[in-house]
Length: 128
Image (cartoon, rainbow, N blue to C red):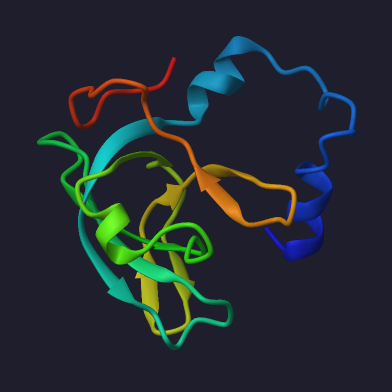
């Protein structure tokens, strides 16, 4: 998704998107995982972290590139549970292959605020 589309989708004043049926929602597999490694990603076009996220035995540890440096240091991220889409195809981000899409909401300046469970849940738990 390009930056223009992302900004259009994140406009808080925009009306709701077109209705979908429940099966379409279920097709997007969003799981909870725990960040087990964080590395700088200096080659990224925008400041980013390389994450390794443990989604439990069913999915394993997956890589994600995340533009979240505005709000999160490497220390803040280690051990944090996050939500990610685990069934998109891998995406090449410069020299890095991102395997999952870590999800969040934009703040007023457009910086990403991560979504996470209020309480700990087992890694690999699916959003419903």
